[in-house]
Length: 268
Ligand SMILES: Nc1ncnc2c1ncn2[C@@H]1O[C@H](COP(=O)(O)OP(=O)(O)O)[C@@H](O)[C@H]1O
Ligand SMILES: Cc1ncc(COP(=O)(O)O)c(N)n1
Image (cartoon, rainbow, N blue to C red):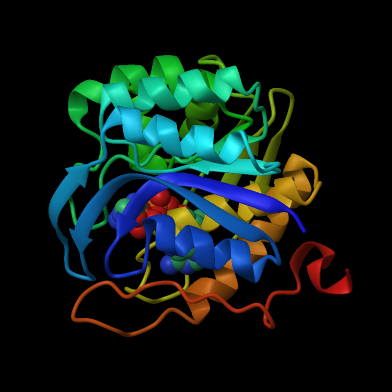
């Protein structure tokens, strides 16, 4: 059994954040653990309140896990504040942990600032350099780099810029493109295009969380970055195709163990 850790915010509606991550870990046949950075009051229509967990308690949760249990990969999601970012970076360095997937969550699909604007600097300086893989969507890549993204060429430029911040691999997600959902992985040498058709649905709550957790699970299971990302792309397509029409707004991705045939998981 591989042990996966998510460091992220709780989404009361279960579609994104910690809840999406744990479901994804289970669907990949791994054991999921969580360090909660914030509790959000959220549903398919919006985010209504956020209570950040104190940096001390975030740090204590990380210590509780790393002093007791072997961790195979970590995913970091919503981290609102500079002090929370700093303690996470400090602990990952303390435990010399390298297999870290960072999803630089900034603004929810409903428009709420999950990352406080003044914490962007800490995200760039403290967390991005620790990323084995960093997974910005297009607005996040624009925010991180200052590059306006209209076409693949711009996604490539942003990937180079984010790589220069210290991340080892950069995946720019194309879910916000108009006509297709093609993601680009940059490993410092090559651009790998992960082509995807745009599934006609409004129910995409939690897609980014799901994808980054799937990548972490696959890396924890020992896959190379490119195989981890390819398997996760297959997973997210199935999760979006089966997204649930629950609530009055943007419904969540759905997680199926038995539908997922990516990356040889079911052969084990
Ligand atoms: N409508 C869609 N059809 C197919 N794939 C999608 C769709 N929306 C998002 N994706 C995919 O879901 C993953 C998450 O991307 P994205 O939605 O851009 O992230 P975020 O949730 O961080 O905004 C990417 O692999 C992206 O290509
Ligand atoms: C607690 C939490 N974390 C992350 C997201 C981003 O969600 P998405 O994956 O849809 O961009 C969210 N809405 N809530």
